[in-house]
Length: 186
Image (cartoon, rainbow, N blue to C red; front, side, top):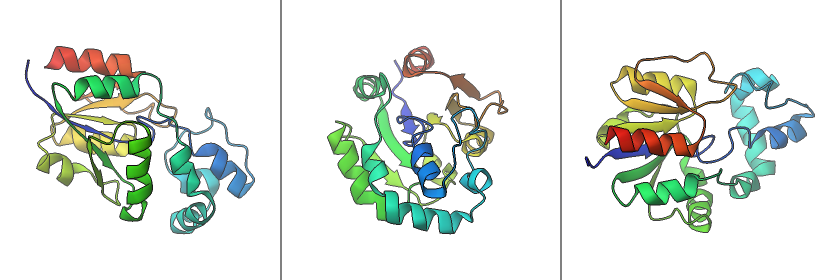
């Protein structure tokens, strides 16, 4: 079996893709449903400038990061995969979220895996530096960028990435499918 370098996004990948919707709905007095969440761009969904939105969100809902729940089978499969492969979390979260992110990983028994907070959706440089073979992602533009750079992407199927196709992108609906793909790939 080949030892793989696997990069894993956090939000929307090991947590529910729609985790932030209830908080954003409360903040902006909206009722956007999971089904209506057809873009990852919060600015488009809520009609608020992204910088303002993030500032307001972090002032009022910083606790939302700590309240995120690891989705079914993700923790178990990640812990199984780390026995045979090199895993790391690569997230667009900003460095000011480092403490809450690391504490959340400890709380969820995932702290043995390195985490990189990039502060940007641009993940190619870090993925290349880590010699990534497979990147597990939910963001459609990230997935396309990574695939265009020659990486295999396992794309968590969501309402906001339905139109994405690429020969190096495999759409998956759960962590069992992720595990099966990695077993076949290795």
